Length: 283
Image (cartoon, rainbow, N blue to C red; front, side):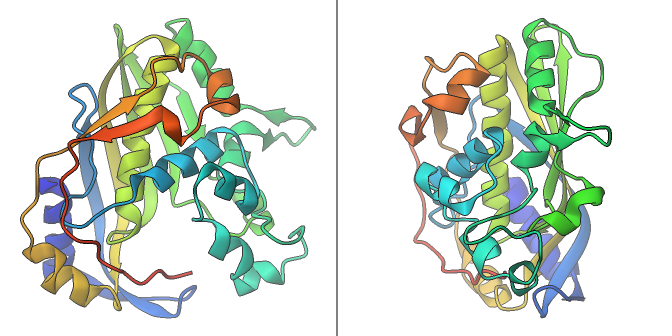
């Protein structure tokens, strides 16, 4: 919580106003932020200065792991986070590559599981990393990237958290995740939960101990219609201690994550929090 609140305060104190063409709003913006999460110590980075709905964040990332490209599939898992971008984004609604209601196009998990090769076929980036780590191999390129500029026009949204780089030292697995853009009041807690959970899951299914997860953000911002709530409400609250995440130990493989795993396989313990804050969401 300390590093999260320090970033929020830094944006309020030092941020520069930048117009955002996609949303038509201004953002108070800083460049470069580095966060760390103690996965080994199970210090789950769930925001305590407002109630955070962690289940949707994990459900969304399960959808990425499965390579989903349809908002209806995310809803079945328990995440409604893609409804607006799939169905309310005017540019995407007019895009000839859109295949109808709830279609997201070639975004996020599609790239991670089915990156198109120019000579035909596809690359399953996640499978390669899981297979290598399961054999104790780190080729210094255990990277999963959702960022495919050649197919931006075929999806409803460019990825924000775009690359995950795993590193294996002895029997300890680390993760460095890169994010180009972050809506700090709303999106960051989702992203924190996902980075932490991704490392915890990958360590579990590849047979290693989790270490630390490193989260690097390039453009961190607060939208103009969020600023008052952040400055005058959330930053005035005292944080509580970090909760803990419990993952079903029966999850032992990528196939498990692809098939039977649900939100019932995740539990959060000792989560104390302040009241929710209804921050506006920008499509």
